Image (cartoon, rainbow, N blue to C red; front, top):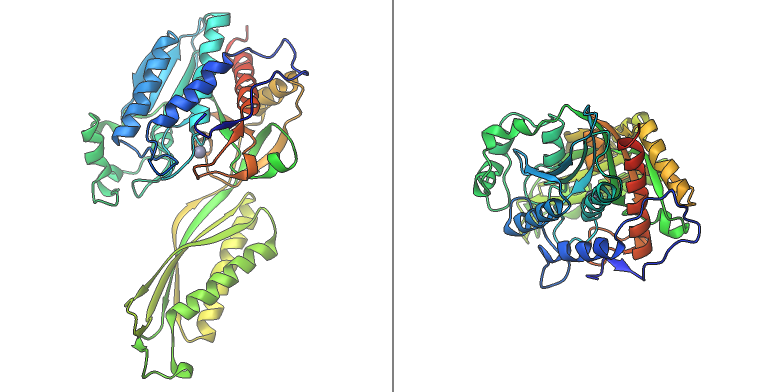
Length: 428
Ligand SMILES: [Zn+2]
């Protein structure tokens, strides 16, 4: 099963007849099939936006939508939608997730919500016919930021959150602009704004947890109340470049030693604040970067997250303060710049209730959760009433080749998703 789903599918004894049935074998097979698109010889997969593997995955998804009798269309940025009209029209009920992956990622991050969303909609239409509300599934083209210097491209296009000329400015590691990559797959960057949707009522996303909480507590489902806010900071430390042989240790103003002390201090700030505060120094560079020169400049990035809006700001302020204090002690100039700032997002309570009811129909009381990871739902909550369902990640592993969820949890999550969608889209 491409390492995606461990164990065998089994029916939970507690399931009631209220829970929507799905084609379990087809669901698991399609997850495996999708994982072949972008599979790396070295293990894991890489489906980066607008690459051949990405196109192949979206075409496969479009074929499955057609097979289910859905109306299929690719929007102006390459999100693929499957749709069934509702007998009463109105605003749409939508489910889905992102179809791109990180480099060396697993078979479920994003892909689970993409395939499960399609299977849920297909099962509902097959069993209950036309819904009262417009019902759609979507494969969102990009979320991870793994190719271009941007992320949440697909969801931001839907939510009217693209920046002017962003497609011209964002580049990949080879210098190819996002705009050129769009043209390469037959999309016109000038029309990106046509992907905006103002007619979505609810967006419901199934996703793997990507952390260990459900797995360690032996719980099978979680509903997300809050998605943590993220700040990306860039810290530049300036000292004095010096001769590695001639400059005595006590005379040096070594920028890298300062940055190293700051890295430890930043981890301590987040640790002292306690969960769910997290802070990560993920990249660092020095100048002039020579073996025999004391670094005169060090520049590093900080990713800081918290689910509380107030505590997130406090975390950022404490990090900046810790860096400045160390800078003063070591006679280093410190500049802290904000690269990206996304506040925490509360998901929609009444839409989440539909997921809670569906979980209870399966005999499961879902855990109320905070997501430390970012998700399409946090962007789409600006354009729709968004809710998220989590299934366990075995060992909390994600963004790696051995990312896995038990097959029975994949099936359970999909059935609960389908049941919540029935609640939303088939109401009288
Ligand atoms: Zn994801």
